[in-house]
Amino acid sequence: MGALGWIAVAVALALSAGAGAWLLLRGRRPASSPAEIEGAAPEQAALVEDAAPEPAEVAIAVPDGRGLVRGLYALAFEGGGPAPVAALAQPDAHEAIAAACANLLARTEFQARHMPRRPHLLPKLMRAINDPDASLEKIARIIGEDPVLSANLLRVANSPFYRVREKPVESLARAAAMLGLDGLRPVVAAALVQPVMQTGDSPFGRLPVLIWDHTQLAADFASGLVRGGRGQEDAFAAQMLGLLHGLGAIIVAQVLRDNYALHPQLRPDPVTVARVLDERAAAMARRIAVEWELSERIGVALDAQQSDALPADPLGRALYAGRVAAALAMLRRHGKFGDDEARAMLSAWIKARGADPALAALWERLPN
Image (cartoon, rainbow, N blue to C red):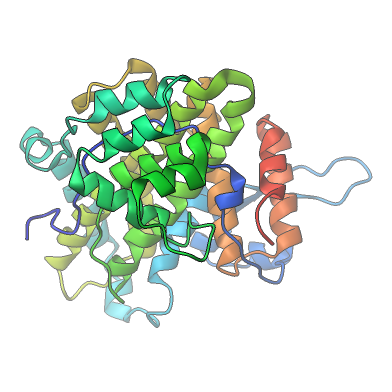
């Protein structure tokens, strides 16, 4: 098994109009007070920053968007017990691993060897999905040209994330009829892009699943944000952006795992892992977009994910907001925030960052 043996990218990438927030996640946890947050460990305290209180109002905790995403990545490492004192005393070793990962990801030979290939069906499928006159039957026939893609589509359509009926979906035609065009687009995109991941009980076995759950949710949020005002084509692009970013994160996670495996005496540091993922995923996704000859606006939107500020680019802005909302939703799902607390944090972030208020409406469509 090679450095990316746990990743097998499916055969194509389609832009998607998004499935909408009805496909999203759930969860709850008792709320934390500002005092509790202030006294938390550094990696926990990084999740929020105190906003200046408004007159006659109680101070609202405004989430740090990138801190939320990093906190989500760190969840994969919970439950492993306290780290040995010797491990805690080796910050330089963790920094060396982070530097080694950055160096490897930047190498031309690494990219040539491990970059996912653009599948041959991509242009045809993109034209069909973006054609308002294309029938569901036509799209299903195109998918049926590739047995692997067909199998992946049925697998994704029957997964808990997308499946809406108890009876299994056993044919492409039924999947198309059941989901409709708007529902079929994100399922096709996920089936084309989703890596086949090696999982397990170790932190690096849990991490890729956590990343991909966040990826799909962020892509749906981003697609929903642009669907109303910018048309189906941009919603399709937003869905693709989210999936590409997640694919980049999966590749970075594998490189981290392989480098930590070279130091078995060193327990992975959640803060280091989360930081490297946050810093390197978008750049890796950008390289995939270039290799697949996607439009420059896709690359611009991916570049914008590396900024601390909300991007000015519409697609980049939608993806950034979607990633923040998805991280908050998943932290809520895993018991880190309560329902009311998470809703208030999202509202505070939207107001403080000038994000699209439609994000709050999409949040309200999350299952309770």
